[in-house]
Image (cartoon, rainbow, N blue to C red; front, top):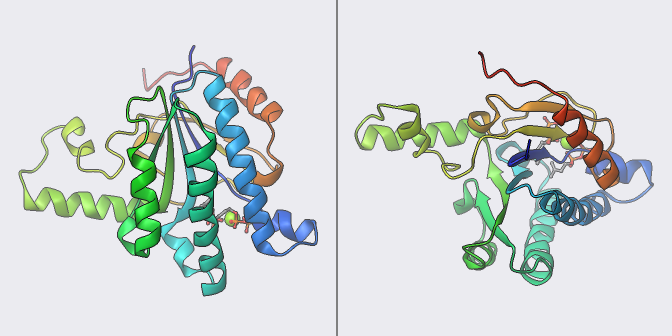
Length: 222
Ligand code: IPE
Ligand code: IPE
Ligand code: MG
């Protein structure tokens, strides 16, 4: 069965830096390299949608130094990697409370969202994203308008309205939790947890996971 949509919780950058005797930011930089490599591999497999957790609502609680370094890296990554090196086949979508970012980063995001609107593949980047904040926002929108009468109508109120259900979710870094990651799309996703730290995650391991997914019978409650 063709895998259409996947989610990735890219965890373990700081532990990778520590294990390699490097400053934290080097772990995040290596993590950005891994993201580029894995996105290419995922799209090569024909997957249409890949959503990655890059910065959560709760990550704002990290030290100012780390948050600043992460946001600087994210801006650099969008400008130098996404806008330059991905070709015409991939569209970029950003999901989260983007209003919390400074205007240069907001401008960079807007620029990236405009390119390749008809591309076959979409890379969704959760930035300043948290499911609870998303739900609260949807509840507020609902209270301002007519109450949604169907699941489909409710989904339209989510920040992630256009993101399809995940076939599978991968979390690297050894923790077995979702950390506020897209609950709507996760409802019937197969969950894969690996101890590999995100900067070390390889195409080989990705393909092993895809293989295992193919051997899983999905019931959807039936
Ligand atoms: C994931 O790695 C990247 C972000 C959350 C931005 P971490 O920074 O959480 O690294 P660990 O999990 O502490 O090793
Ligand atoms: C999840 O990782 C968020 C991202 C990968 C951006 P965290 O490291 O923030 O999650 P917790 O704190 O281990 O749950
Ligand atoms: Mg972590």
